[in-house]
Image (tube, rainbow, N blue to C red; front, side, top):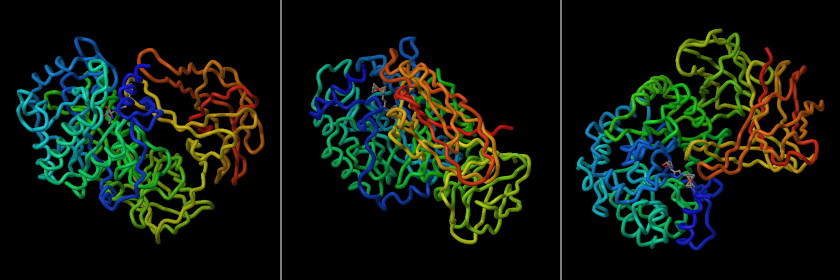
Length: 593
Ligand code: H79
């Protein structure tokens, strides 16, 4: 597999078994912070929505080289097209972002309701987008632009009151023989410590010395960097900038907070300081061929999903080689921003949900107030908040008070029958004290109910995170039930209902040819349904580029009626020894109407 090329180069430096950079190894994104949460990161809680900017020579190429389009993440084009260093340097000679206006970028972030900007100071391509004495391969010395764009951006952030930080690729640098990653031109591994001492360390010193107070140095793909090397970089950043944070992708369990996998949004709440990083389309860098932009509503939903789990949502945009933010991104930022500004209290400085999964949306909190983000407006405006035990003093929707009453198992808010305007309606509940709620799984009759795999009780099977890419570098993540051991193995959900309900049960799964036509069973309160699981065309290797291609399919496995309110149990598993390789991403109860 092609990724082994990188891995081999990495291994030679670290003298360790080759780490796989295919999503199965910690070496790709770092293994998560092992150090205790720092007070340094306290401000992260006040700042839940941040802008990520990928900008570099790759922005000039926009995902194409010599007439060929490379679909997927555009900032990897040098590697994907195997461009020699000398030819890639030619891109610098043409790079002239004459439309770049730092104030406009910062205002676009601010208009979106974002509080921070993190920009690529040097991506894997090795080109410094700032003035650097450590390497002439930088925006001031090697381009006709001759301006330190990042200095302008730092100053604009300061003037507009936004925090500012740098992405720095510490391990991969495809311009340097001694760094990691460029295996198409430098066939033998170089002297990694020399690269660190001659380029990475001096440049990180420049970034932490010349741009005023910075919020973050955002590292990426630690690869073979050793613990002492990671530690030196962290200490260097903290010494120069005591308030600056380092993310977990410095590697080796270090850093001040966790960055989840690229484009990963967790399904369940998570403790500690962490962020999700996401992008507007399917690329980080500007790509002319990629117009698959998420809508403002989708972005707002993703923001709320992250904030309600306790994290920070950092959303990327990719300006082009002229320095222009794509129109689609500008429109999205302004639309999302109008919503964030109306609901500032529900986002910035807010806390995570006190509930288990809410079938209609998500919840964020501030003091004694709950913010209910209603993604799926209930029929007749009857919104049930399962598990809420606190007394509700007042419920408000769209600026007016609405009726609210306690019901067995929760609270019912009577909203207008029609969904109000706005990206996501937010209902506020003012409580008599701090929220008291159970995290019990409750299935509501009026909504789709996803039974999260992370909440299942497992017998002889496992919960495993599946990561894969459809286009190159565009990651997807699912926590899947897998590792079935045959007829005795099962996953079970216990849940409550508050009223009688009937559902279709949808199963989202992958199966290979070996699992084709395996027999499975689902029991609902002891009543058994059996069904065959069909091959989904699952592939563990693909020709186009490294990595597996899981093929998820959603099928209906039957209908169920839960006649009485109370406790119920759904159990799923294979009936015999066939189907051990099946992976289940979700079970969803869809109301029958
Ligand atoms: O900056 C963005 C990406 O360019 C960067 N992280 C975000 C924020 C990133 N660098 N590496 N990765 C993400 C992981 C990519 C790994 C892969 Fe591959 C690329 C897997 C398959 C293609 C490298 C090459 C590993 C195997 C082959």
